[in-house]
Amino acid sequence: MKRWTAVDIKKMKGDKPWAMLTAYDALSASWVEAAGLPAVLVGDSLGMTSLGYESTLPVTMDEMVHHTAAVARGVERALVIADMPFMSYQSSMECGLANAGRFLKDAGADAVKVEGGSIRADLIEALVENGIPVLAHIGLTPQSVKELGGYRVQGTNSAAAQRIMDDAMAVEQAGAFAVVLECIPAELSAQITKALSIPTVGIGAGSSCDAQVLVISDVLGLSRKPVPSFVKPFAQLAPQIEEALATFKAAVEGGDFPDENQSY
Image 1 (cartoon, rainbow, N blue to C red):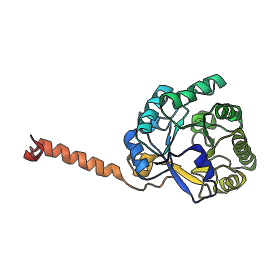
Image 2 (cartoon, helix red, strand yellow):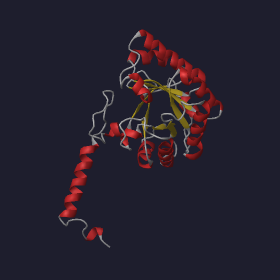
Image 3 (cartoon, rainbow, N blue to C red):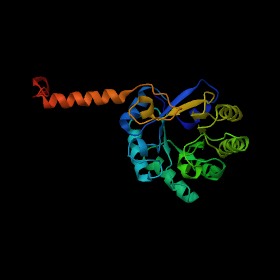
Image 4 (cartoon, rainbow, N blue to C red):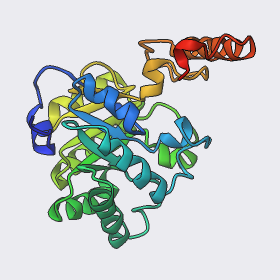
């Protein structure tokens, strides 16, 4: 079976909509693989979903490399995209190149994701020139949440919308193979999608994008915590898991497990 590449993803511009999910370990990656999704994102959202942090900001390169390697071991075909964590590329071009290289060399990733538009164009160009495919990320950029004043919709007035359009054009020109549009008005994402020759991947950006991405734990309903309004849970597994664990506990305490069928 042929493995998906960044070139393949880029060629999907304008085709039928396609889906992408996050994954954080080999098990969740195997679910994404089984669903036949072309790409899997090892998001720094693992800080909240897996590591117990309150935001993405504390996530380290070592943590991201560790989880990316696990995801890479869990797939055969899907393109593995590693999220560049906070301060792994902002301080210098050299820092960004070195850390992106770690994802490909040490973790088996196929591409990296970088937050930021025009301000990251030079870095994106340098990464691509050095053989590292880049998924750009504009609109709401969670690593800038403190500067943005919280998780809120971006591009809601004409000036802000123009800045996001400029960011989209800049990352395309720099060589990104696709761009994530997060939490922007649906009309703006439709305009950007029409203007670009690379795929747009929406998250809270309406239905006009070429693709959609969500956090896998949100899609599966694995947590009882509130989810963003743009999320549609396609299952509610948390109650089922809790019920199964409670049944296991009762079976052990009642002497019903293990029985002769689970004994040697």
